[in-house]
Length: 133
Image (spheres, rainbow, N blue to C red):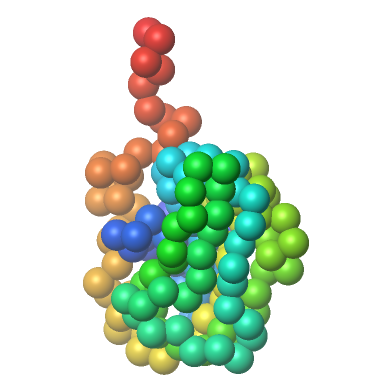
């Protein structure tokens, strides 16, 4: 799985499209803004997601944030490691996916942002200038 193959939503989720399925995860930008994650409320396998509607939430030491789905479809897998230990997202947001979805309308992914556009607006936190410099 490479970062270059991903698309991004305005809600700061990355979408890794693999044929008719997609994995969803939090971007580095969002995990940094939220701080250390302590709880994740994720849907169950078999539930249906609707693009633009909430499908779960994450709680950090700072706040609780709803997650809006960038795609529609049926949940075919939930990452058990992240469900058990949401802080894994903070350690490696590019690998710690939340759910895998069987896409109902693959054309919805065309509205997602390419990496260049997303990173121009919201750079990875490790690429931001150090305010101390």
